[in-house]
Length: 383
Image 1 (cartoon, rainbow, N blue to C red):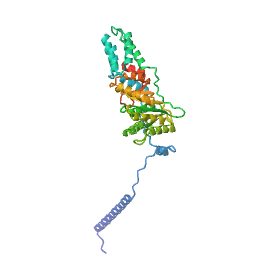
Image 2: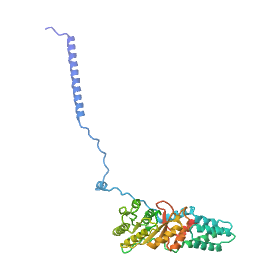
Image 3: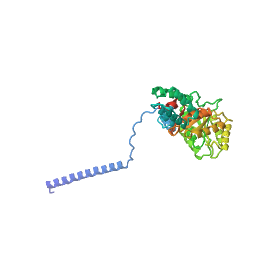
């Protein structure tokens, strides 16, 4: 047998080694592909959640069941704050009476012509002839004919006399306390266009600010927007409004409001009425009917007559007629600002023997405040 050349053995060994290497590479490659395939087919797991903070028993259920907070009503301004602000507004107004008074105490010489002009201005400010004569006679005695030598004393004398005319002895307290478990009932009346519905809404805010529970009665069923307007005021203050259908009997709506207020135990029921001309007997008779129907359920504790302070003498005529029909217990003077003459406060009280209880000096929601003789005079004198 011919021996194999060593070179051949070397070649054969190399081929065998190469084949082994290739086989190993193929096996490793196939195994890697199978692993990658299995990895791609595994479902994707969600990332682990962060550990929650410890929750007390029942806290999760309470959070789920807690109702959404109810919308809060406006917070009305307190009565004392209103009065101070309104007094400042009166002091800064162009009120005819205020200008006449301040003009007098700033005059260097008080001669006959000065007093005549002063008297004419007072009468023109709706102060009335009687109160004007009283004031001028007193001031002429107290102040030197040669002039205001001491302005501080002149202002003091003027303030004292004006406060007397405004009569601080009158009871201006709003009777908003019911009896025998019934609510107090406040009836608001007046002629067309004086702003009764707005005033009722402002009065509701004032009472709520004093801690009273209030219900509104929309007895103005002739004006389509009146009930909606009063409802808006009620929602804003957070009080209920009792309404009737358009054209419904206003006496019936007023009775329903008082009856609802009695059943729910509220402190005060405010009844808004339709504006009516004082010279229309049928409308005035209807106002008397509203009063009689309400009193079948509860006594009327206040009947407030709203007067526009800018109407002057015409307002006095209106006041007399309304007082005869409804037994007015208090006056609300609106628009007692720069467009009013101011003296109507004194004259309407003199004519009716009924106190001014509330005054309005603007269009703001809180521009209604209790009237005081001292506060009114201080506002006129800019104090």
